[in-house]
Length: 258
Image 1: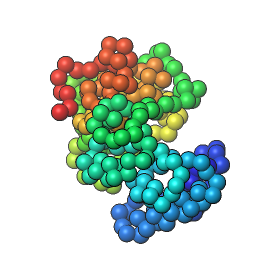
Image 2 (image 1 turned 30 degrees about the horizontal axis):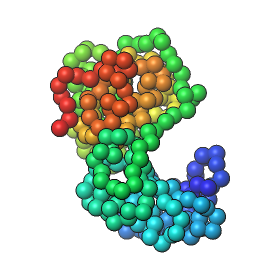
Image 3 (image 1 turned 180 degrees about the horizontal axis):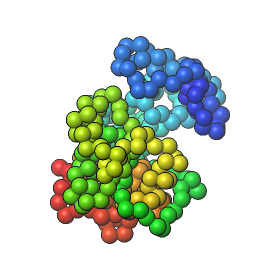
Image 4 (image 1 turned 90 degrees about the vertical axis):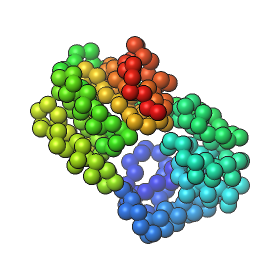
């Protein structure tokens, strides 16, 4: 059973309290109230029919005290001292890290690592490439979109950028990314669905992954490899677990994330 919203198209049995999704969150009290209302409703409903609960929300995790069901919680974020302290107060939860690097930064009694995966049948392996580099990800400083542009210019290879511009990083996009977009050498194509990812990654010489943080996983690296495209990345977070230097990726000798 998946507890979601009414717009979900995932082909599984699902229930929802709110018919429409709300993203990005506006950051107001009403949005938090809706999330808490959905969470407590889902907990009550699941208690009658489920044997185990898998949570992905910190708000939902705090409600685990109200249920006798076994709880699994997946960490989707980098280490945050305040969150780690909250997790330590819930020692009965089974915590799932999405990389060994992420696990190494936590200290919890019940932890295991389960890497993300993809359905390879949905990706097309392309052996013939075109003369451009690609970047896919949130347009944010930690993802290094500005560094991808610098790399493209230094290598004199055109760059195609795809990704969401979240409201919190609109200023970053306007100041560090938009001035370089000319539609020719540096092109921004907007958010990319599965078909667009196949097209963009599959034909690319390489995908740039110049992160400036300890990435918990980085699913787009797996997607690039599934399309037969190598990854050029900074060595940080999960990167050395996901791609192998000299085989599916290349790490620079410098510019490591501190």
